[in-house]
Length: 181
Image 1 (cartoon, rainbow, N blue to C red):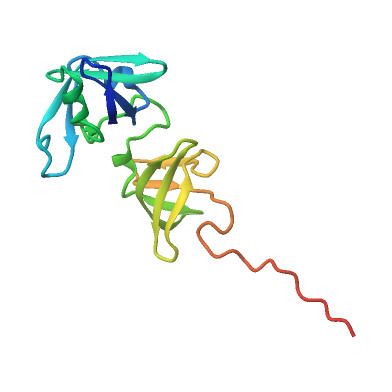
Image 2: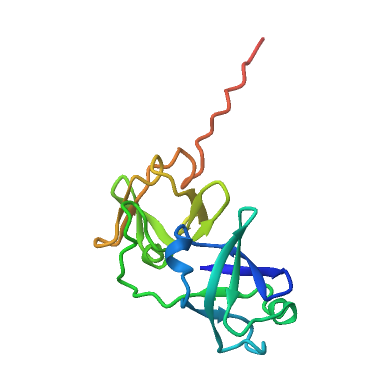
């Protein structure tokens, strides 16, 4: 859902980098987050309960139960926040999927399988599908409707219409040499 970046203020506020399109639904008072940390971290196996999410200068700042001062907030820096999610739950939006719904789907081009979705990379400009292919290794495909016109979760497929050369070696377009006498 997000990543804790750093402490904010003296009363336990924590700046967040959000990974969700719907923070108003995910970051509500009482929401509980599982923490992704190294096994040797003092936060390993623990959860955080959200008291409040505020916005300061366009940046989200969270306040969690039991985190009452800057020192406690600083101990959480760089922790990833997760939520438990029903694997079959719908996103509630048309043309929107959770990453776990896309990973593992067969990728089809002109009805022929060209690979499998390995992961989704969330970039500032657009999301990318990382596709494992047998011939080219990993191929990154912009996850935009012009290139990925169809996702069929029930059928287990993603249809792509990529530009020439994305999944195969581009044809030799060099001009033949001109021979002069």
